[in-house]
Structure formats: C-alpha cells, structure tokens
Image (cartoon, rainbow, N blue to C red; front, side, top):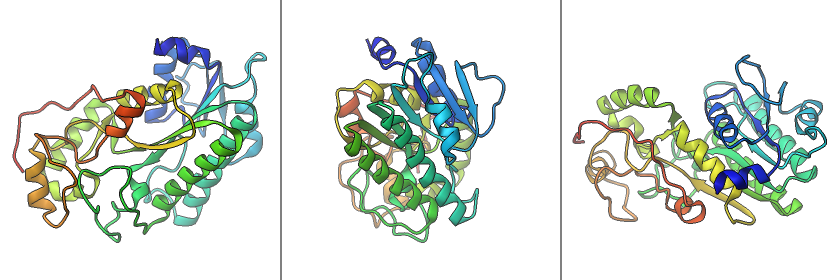
Length: 296
C-alpha cells in the first residue's frame, strides 16, 4: 500500500542523493518504482536515476534544473538531505549560509512548482544540547518538546531549517516533515561505533546513546511522504535500543544523574523517543544492533 502511494506522488527530487542517507532513500524509492531525480555536489557514477544534476543546492539555476518536470510531469515531492552535516566540516559562516540558503532554495523551488509533500533532514543537534558549551538535555528520554539551547552554527542552521520548512509549508499549503536524525549509518558502521562508545559511554550521553540504521531512515522518509498529515512536523527517529546495549536506567544513573527522567526507562531502550513518529507515521526501526547484553 505504501509503495502505491509513493508512486502516486509522481517524480521525487532527492538532494544529497549520493550521500549515506540519500542513497538509502533513492534505493527505497526505486524499489517502489518511483521516478527519482537526484541533486548533489558530485556524481559518484553509480547512482542510476532518470536525471542527476551536479551542482550547489544554493545556486538557483542548479536547483531549477533539478526541480524541472520529468518528461512533462512536475516534481511531486522533495526529500532534502544535502547539507554540510557536521559543525567541524566548515567554518561557521559558510556552514550556516550553505545549510540555510540551500534549504530555502530547494524547498521554495519545488513547492512553488506545485509539489505538496516534502521531507528534510534536520538533526538531533537542532536542540543544541549535544555541544558541551550548551546545557545538557533537560530530561530523558529526549523528545520534540525538549528545550532548545544553541551554541554553534550547525545547530542553529538546523533549527532555522525547521522554521524555514514550516514557513514554506504554510505559504504553499504543503505537508512537510523534518526528521531530527541521530547518528545514522550502515549496520557495519554502527557496530564499529558501538564498540568505541562502549569503551567511553560518557561521550555519547548528550545524544541519548541513540543511533539509526540508514535503512530505517529511508523507511521513515517513505512513510513521511505518504502519511495522512497536514502542516509541518518535527520528529525524532531512532532505533528503539541504545548503542551501548546496556540498561538505559543504569546509563542515565551513572553518566547523567543530574538529568531528570520524564518517563520510566525500560530495558536497553534508546534515550531518544520516537513515539511521535510512531503515532503520526506508523514508523518504528527494525534494523537494530544486536550484541551481548552489557552494563553501564
């Protein structure tokens, strides 16, 4: 049923199509026989799409080429994933400008062209609490009501992107979902990272020891493209268990005793809640890290 609804959207533009999440989204859409247009700074040569535009998502001409109809059929939806994805990958001003201008340019072009469904990649860092210069999370499990505390340009860019998306959704009468993705990787990368995190669990406290398999990220995007929603929504999505594989209550008590609990912690659950995504999208993660149980 979801695949039929995806096909009914018409062509879908995926920015950042050569990236980690972008490739998974492209694969998921193509598995549903959706026509996909890609936009990225580079063409890796192994992404087979009906049209792949190479260029900067802040350049209006480049975006216009990517957002153009496919054989007369207008773009029906956009999945905007392109960005500078980490605060250490660029200086603050160009990072902020790239992310914020790119999000506006892409969403405005596609929605102005008639699309009424969009998904963007925000980040768990949009709350600001991951940066040690900010306050730690106000409570666990982290959810969409968490107070914002910003102290870096990347976090600010993602929060602005969420507001940009909400404004454009309101302007064009579109439906939009912004996903606050946690650490997101292929299964092999998650397993490697888990080994490092288990050695130093305190370093991942601010992000709730959360992770997400790219396949589950792609499934969340697919669900958001067709869910019976209206307006703009910000949603956390994370695997149901934590990357340490330890009882969540033990992790919180040992490494974050000062942080109050908003709800009882059960088993090895993630300390980021995906409950709102479950309620609105019917989504939950299925590709979970399985390891020998450990203790904090």
